[in-house]
Length: 181
Image (cartoon, rainbow, N blue to C red; front, side, top):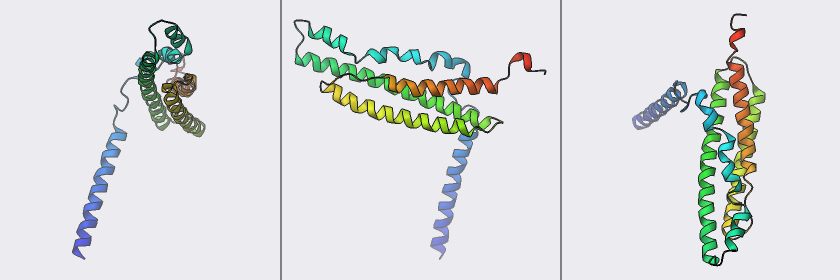
C-alpha cells in the first residue's frame, strides 16, 4: 500500500508542476513575439504575391522552349520551385498561427464575450489546415509533372483572420476623441 501511495503522490506532483508551467506561460505578458504596431508589414498578404505565381506554367513553358532544356532540367526546375513554395507555405503557416494566437489572446482579454468570433476563428483554422493539406498533395503531383498549385486557397483564411484581428484591435483600443466621453 505504501508503494501505491508514493507513486500516486509522485504522479500528482508531476501533474501539478506541469499545470503550473502551463499556467505561468499562459499568464506571462510577453506571449506575442511582435507588438501589434509591427504586424502591418509582417502579416501582410501582399508578402506572398510571389508565391501565387511560383508554380505557374508560363515560366516552365519559357524554359521548355530553350534548346538546352531537357527532362532532367525540368525535374530540377520543378524540385526547386516546390522547395521554394514550401518555404513560403511554412512562413505563411507561421503568420497564420501568429494571427490566430493574437486573436485568441485579445478574445480572452476582452471585456465582451465573442462566441461568433471564436466560431469564425475555428472555421478559418479548419479551412487553412484543409487548404494546406490539399496544396501539399498538389505539390507532390506538380513534382511529377502535373499542373501548378493555386496558392489563393491559402491566402483567403489568412486574410479573413487578419481582418478579424484588425477589427478586434480597433474595438479594443478606443479612439482618442472618445476617451473623455
